[in-house]
Image (tube, rainbow, N blue to C red; front, top):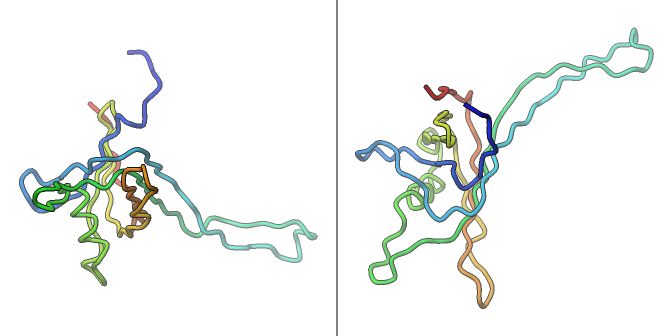
Length: 147
């Protein structure tokens, strides 16, 4: 099979809700970014003669989601995926971590435990209401390649 370019809109982002099915899609997204970062330990000694040396001491991941705030105008019911993230974002301590899944169009699944914070709810006069979430991964990401 030929390797092709992947459109961002074809990724599926889900949060575990404890309902059936276990993962609920997060709807209304207009952009996503899955990033990695690292913490470095400075290992420079006098022996390096002024040249810096280091090693990676920690690695982490984050997921940024932006979209449109979804709500049933008649009932006030929120999109189940957005509501689940907002509920998670309000928790503290061990319950502040939830399970997320990020599935590529080819079927590779990344599953991870993470906390979330919601911001950027708003917009201009003629804009749909925006919605932004920053998700910080706790621990490692499990990657299951497509079969």
